[in-house]
Image: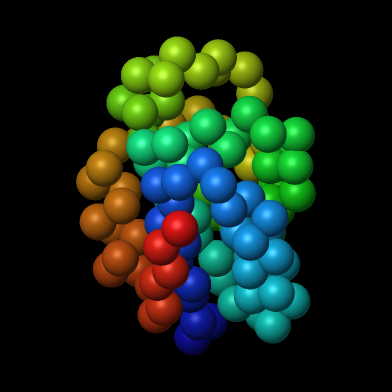
Length: 102
């Protein structure tokens, strides 16, 4: 079974670290799942966010996304199902062997 790394992102300050960790885990053959919430949803607006596309299964808290008034333009790596609730965070914890918080 493939090992899975879960990344919970509630801060908008560590995108470079998230990208680097995701790339490293992917290069080692790990599955990566990322959930963005609170201020973390703002990272979707950073031009570097597209570097995560294809490296991880990504979802975000739709309530926080809407609360910040962020535009629902296409976000690289997040499809319509990717706009989720906090229940997805609970699933992330269950689905992962390792779990990191930013």
